[in-house]
Length: 285
Image 1 (cartoon, rainbow, N blue to C red):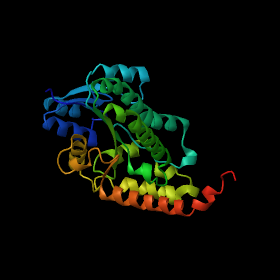
Image 2 (image 1 turned 45 degrees about the vertical axis):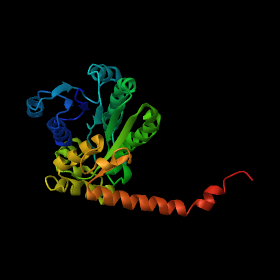
Image 3 (image 1 turned 180 degrees about the vertical axis):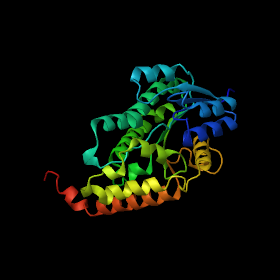
Image 4 (image 1 turned 180 degrees about the horizontal axis):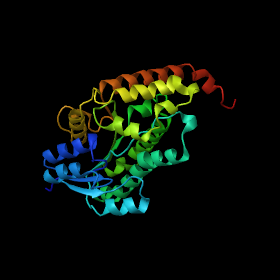
């Protein structure tokens, strides 16, 4: 039996790169995507030396372009939509350009990628789609409105998709990472407006949150190697997270993410409990 094939997007650094190398160490095949091979030369070299292959694919490309690149791969057993980034800014001041780019990268690109992978998965009657989201989708902080919205859209689509493809023996897993020690924060700083440009009336809490984010670079509690292990295990049914395979729709990575999601869920349930009577009151007599 041939080795399983993984398509992993956003592998120029961070969790995507670490996961690609983890999968290759397990003897599986990897097709890794980066936006630009020249700029990601170090990552390309690591992946290729480990036995993987690398393609150029930007999540902001057209649906037709992404589809042609994905379908050219052929068989895909595991698709990991990892590529993404964040913009931090007050919701009121977000530009059309930033909004369009954020949604294209974090939602439309992954959507077009999984659409292109599904026909082959249906034909082979197996496959796993992993959409890397963020705890920000479940517990949005000030300054994160656009990023949270893009990830929440990906999660909602994932939940609906999971019900659609279950009869074809295809699984969908949403990954919910907390803060991991990658270049995410430094990339965030490059993409976001300077904190000093936040209007004074939004400095608290928006400016405070942005400044806090920028101080944690290199100090995040999450270990990307361990995060990649848990993703691999939850996908393949092996190791520590193997028992979660097929039993959870979300893989929570990091005690910080777990704490925030638990608190947010408890608030949601509490608010629901307050509204049972008023919700029922809207029915026809």
